[in-house]
Length: 264
Image (cartoon, rainbow, N blue to C red; front, side, top):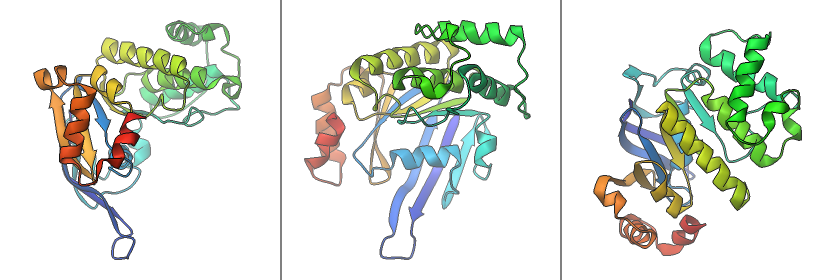
């Protein structure tokens, strides 16, 4: 479904500040896979997402989505097939537009090339029904501007925007990290429910190691731009946080000072 073949990316090449962010990354996801991704700062997690989303051209390798080579496809064209949530609840929405208008933009982008905000009663009822799934009472606030919502409410709506037309691939970039624990748990459960219901192939970056073992069906560990561990099946089912930390120490090129980051 998603396949990365020997993908590499360096920043500031040929200078003293050259950094190899991705190094010969091979990765294959089957339809419906939900992969959690862990690793210390600078491991290459967000760079991996940016490469898949098309935020820059990779230096080498190929990226295939649903059997089609998207290596050179522009990011705005990939966005019709790839949904993405960021850590910052303010990202990915238009704060001065209403909830209804934000949902309309996401919905129309997902079903056709043009974007028009001409809404009818059928559209409003559809958005109301979708928002009611969040359990936050937002179905009665369609005319409220996004900028007036709390961080958790906004992230929940952003999740709905990214999945209102189920994408081929969903990228979750620490999308609960900026929320308080209770709200983060609520958004995580909403994520699990939507992904499972719509069978959406998903990749999720997290620094919460317990969450990385509880969410989805597969856990990938990155270090120095490489995938150093890929846990699934019985091996993952029997894994503990302590065991995961031990594996990180064993596979990491750095010392254990990154453990603190992984446990945050």
